[in-house]
Structures are given as C-alpha cells and as structure tokens.
Image (cartoon, rainbow, N blue to C red; front, side, top):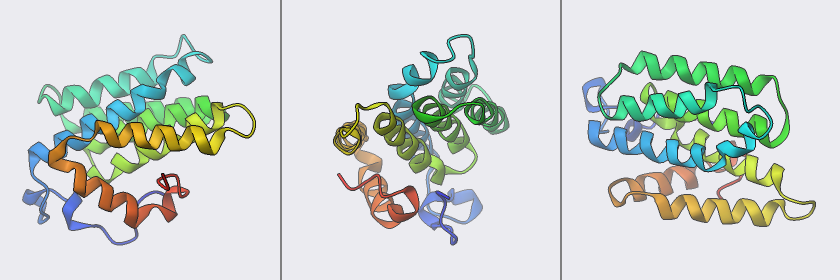
Length: 171
C-alpha cells in the first residue's frame, strides 16, 4: 500500500476541495515520470519488445502538457502495471514505477509510488549487499530532481508516508 488511509488535501486539486494547483499537479506528474524513466532500462533490458511502461511515462507527460485527458494517462498506467505483474525483481518494480507515474494524472498522491518503486527497482538490481546503498543514492538523485515549487510538499509527504512506502525514503 502506498496511499494513506486519509487523503491529504494538499494532494487534492482545488476544484475538488483540496489545495493543489493545476501547475503543481503537473509538476508532481513530471517529477514522477522522471523518477520512473530513470529506472526504465531495468524493465526494457528484460522486456525490450513491451512498450507499455515507456508509453505510460509518455502519456503522463502528454497529460501534463494538456495534450490528452486524465483518463488516457490513467489507462496507460494500468497497462504498465499489467506489464509489471508478469515479472519479478527490478524489472517488475521499474514497470510499477512507470504505472504509478502515469496515474498521478488521476491521483496526485501516486507521485510517491513512482519514486518508491524506482528505489525498489534500483535496490533489486544492485549487487548482493549493495541494495541499501544503491537505494539511498537513487533517493538522493530523486530529491535533486524536485522542482522548487513542490520540493517541500514532496519531502513532507515522504516523511509522512515513508513507513507505508517500505521505508525507502530513509536517505
């Protein structure tokens, strides 16, 4: 489980009664896409003919640019997660990261799912005994990619949801 039982209004758009602006929602989606894309090679090296995770990342970016509807990005995320179910290890986590990134268009709080699964992918791909270190490096890399406008929001979200995100944000 990566979503909290009680929704944080900071991740609900203003038009739905929360405080999240459209521009910050788009930034969250783009950051999640960047996190997922950073580990996408771990999926593609195992499943080079399966375009679903890459397409999910492309779809959420298209949504953030206003080119497609939320439902199209959400559907692409579902397809990427279906690709994940067929696999194990790093490839599975990388595909889940892409799927989570795409569904940020629907539920902004999935931004941490993309980041957490990317960290899990890196940990799984690391040589024996190096997973924690590799995951910490990935976590720090992700934080360096955060746009200033959403930085504190995401860092606070990581602190609040770290436990339900497999404690991957202890970096």
